[in-house]
Length: 80
Image (cartoon, rainbow, N blue to C red):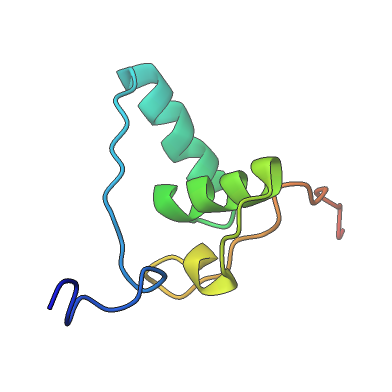
């Protein structure tokens, strides 16, 4: 039986690798840290959702530590 036991398409995951320069890697990592200490994965998933309107479930925007990404378009406010 083809596909038996593999789960639904929406529950499976696939790897996506991207080769960038060391400078770009550092910049992306810094962006993730500056946005509520997110993982790079959570930052990229949020950017894809906000920029291109991809269907990214909210649970995919949480990093492995369970923190929620802020929307990419939110403005920083001075609370002091």
